[in-house]
Length: 134
Ligand SMILES: CC(C)(COP(=O)(O)OP(=O)(O)OC[C@H]1O[C@@H](n2cnc3c(N)ncnc32)[C@H](O)[C@@H]1OP(=O)(O)O)[C@@H](O)C(=O)NCCC(=O)NCCS
Image (cartoon, rainbow, N blue to C red; front, side, top):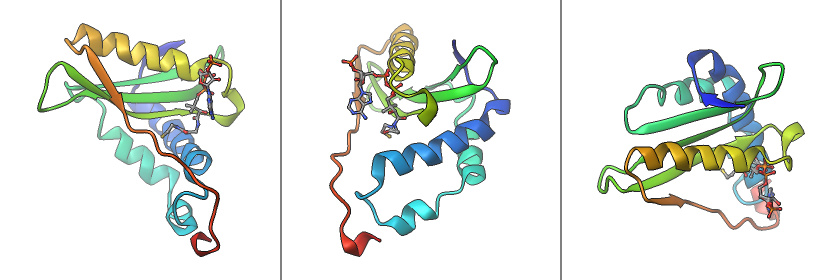
């Protein structure tokens, strides 16, 4: 199920954010920057996004109500018809089951209802790890 994120989801979101960054950026950024990530700190930072009128913050929950992924999007300041997908992370145990697709669709629908008709997302092309990154 996809629903709006709340304060009680931020611990799980912080953990999923950190493991998602390891999965996405290992080998592409220095290991030290990944090791420096802290789930509590990231959860608090994500909490700052809750309730912003231009943002859409959604979580995916499993049948037991546990958060298994989240997505954060918003309307850009410069153009009210342009939206951005800022974060998309799924718990590694739930990947490749359509959760990411559901979250992306839900973000697009919510932003569409806010007047957005274009959605951007930044995609990193990752490389193999270099010795200097370790
Ligand atoms: C990227 C991520 C959000 C995808 O979520 P997911 O729930 O596994 O994705 P879905 O199962 O909904 O798959 C949706 C589509 O993406 C494809 N896909 C999923 N993960 C992929 C990957 N790592 N590489 C290439 N394609 C991928 C699926 O094959 C599917 O396409 P298809 O229907 O044509 O087969 C998830 O793997 C993740 O959290 N990764 C770590 C964090 C990350 O990379 N976030 C994005 C950048 S910050």
